[in-house]
Structures are given as C-alpha cells and as structure tokens.
Image 1: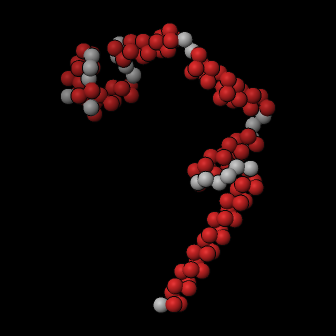
Image 2: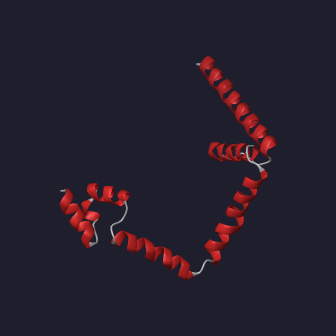
Image 3: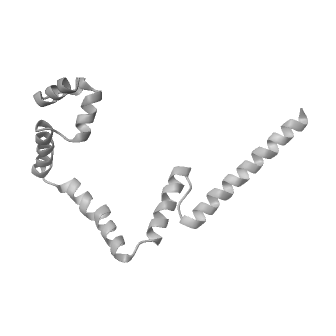
Length: 124
C-alpha cells in the first residue's frame, strides 16, 4: 500500500511541476497570467494573426474593434437601431429568408404571420 501511495504522490508532484512550468512559460512568452487553456489558446491565436498581417490590415481591424463598432454601439442613434429592427421585421413579413423557411418546416408552431401559416400548410 505504501508503494502505491508513493507512486501517486510522485505523479501529483510531477503534475504540479508541469503546470507551474507551463504557466510560467506562458506568462514569460505573453506577459499575461495563465488562467485556463481557452484563454491561452485565444491569446496564441491572436499572436499568430498579428504575425501574419500587414500594417493596413492591422489598422483596419484596430479601427473596427476599438473605434467604429464601440462608438456605433454606444452612440448610434435610436433611429438607426430602430431602422434595422424595422427592416428585419419587414423582411420577415414579406417572405423571410431560406433559413427561416427551413426552420418553419421543422417548427410549424413558430409561424406568426399569414404567409408563414400558408407556407406551413403548403409544405405539410
């Protein structure tokens, strides 16, 4: 029994060493504290993406991520947001898209407008 306990304790110590080494290496490579594998994976992907981009693409992405979208999301007029909602509602009322029609085939209870109910009756 002592032998088994000893083997397990050695394995656990080795695992702790590996984890601490991995987190230390990650922190040294990226300058960020290791939290979990998803965070490490995303940071690595971001670094690879940055290595393969030219300066024009980097500027475009920076503009979109940090200027355009946050500003529109924060300061976009209620009218522009309402216009988008209205256009989506009109599209659904006037016939929707192929994905919505496919969804209606499988879920006829989701039909709300007359054309949707007729579409479901035709397909049944």
